Length: 318
Ligand SMILES: [Zn+2]
Ligand SMILES: [Zn+2]
Image (cartoon, rainbow, N blue to C red; front, side):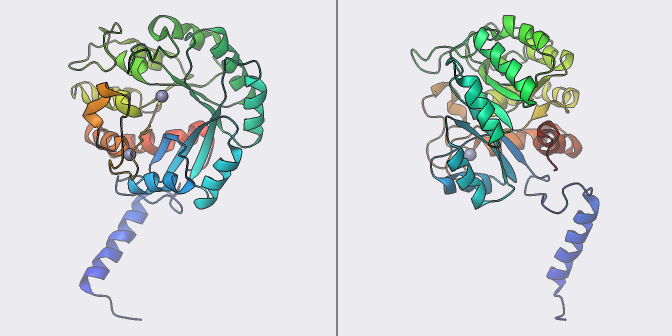
């Protein structure tokens, strides 16, 4: 056997030490990555070119990602999966305002979809469309990811899952067997008790006792997706709030990127059509949010949020 140099021997010993410290779960196929933990991105919108998906995931140091898709795209999902077996899961959506949505989504789950999402439609937060989807998700045992937004990003955009602050609790109550994952502007702005739909991304200190904070505590069937500028903003705006919030909801929060950069390093066009999110222009949202999480929580909590919780939720081995 070739003699080890001092350097390679040191690396070897470090590797052995790290491997011994990682619990058996996921030791084989889940390297720690540059983030100190393997990372699962719950919110990766499937890109047109199969290889572009892997470029973002690899570039940002992400281990696995959940493809969010709309329409009949099963073949493309398979192509992406074939590029990196075991690294992609899949959520599907169809237009939930159409009468055939239930049949289409049921078929998608038969074809391998593990959830519904992202549900981003101009409907009411507790309206008949989302109620139908909640009932179906419970029946099929899959979670459902919803985009809540009350303030336009550009003129005439309109609102999405409207009435979050007043109406969403009704949905949580009516469908205790449905696992709901909240996401986007209104979900995250409402971590602060003083929010009244003034702006998409409020800044400054968070008034304790916001609706989202309370719902996460009160409803076992609600989870929070930390993706996008909205999630990043909520976790960044008040450093005196974030550590306790992450601790409180360490079993309910899920890392996601919702990033549109090309290379996992902020390249290409990001935050397009959303001037209010300019603070993240030219940056990779995944990297920014992983950095905030690591700054704000101890490694064991970070690992839950960026890796373990998603596996438990999707009932897949970590
Ligand atoms: Zn969204
Ligand atoms: Zn990115």
